[in-house]
Length: 126
Length: 190
Image (cartoon, rainbow over all chains, first blue to last red; front, top):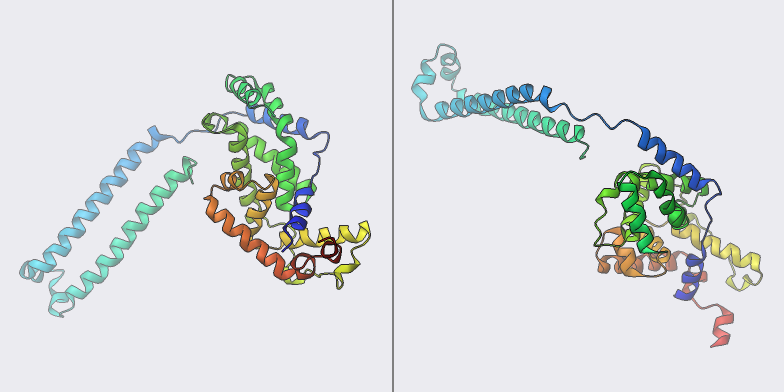
């Protein structure tokens, strides 16, 4: 390949900014400087809601873990439960629980992801 | 272009003297508009992109660490912006296969024909896949300085060299008569 040719052709390409370019940029900069600062994320207002959401998430996770643990280790109490006994008797309890646990976990993970994404979006870090 | 002038203007802007930013704009408007033009090939759009780059630089001025030259920081910021702008709204692209090469390269005798050839090469560069095009654009913009091109792209030098090589290879394969073999005049000169 003749590098010289390519070098010459691609090095020569030069244009000059139009005469009003610098003034247009400075106008835009002044507008930017005059504009009010972006509204910060209202942490004080959002904090109680976020705390409640975090507690609810924690409670849900603990409940889920407890439910799965009970189903796996203590079959008798689960089988005696008036709600769960019929299902247990149908010998599908473990399948149902594991299937539901998967969905619940997925829902929790999605919720957590959406909370993180919202916070990142609000703080302009995306 | 003086690095100390840049630094002084940045300090002034950071202390609230917005007018000092004009010095930065006047010193760097040519390079930034030219860089944008090399990316998009459209004069009007290149000025819009350069203006946006200056605005971003103004907003992020406090993030410039003095360990790198102001120009290095500015070009990296502008390059990032131009790349993402072109991903968002691609420029006038021609498929590489659609770029017609003149049938007889020996016909490049007049200035007009040479200009046609240069135009064909530039169009071929625009039609390259983005990663090769960007490497070539930055390399020639920085007067064939791989280090500067790598800094602007935020890539290791080895990667930039590999992309340059591959980009040239593609150009050579697409425009073999222009770039693949020496022209008669050159052969005769040797």
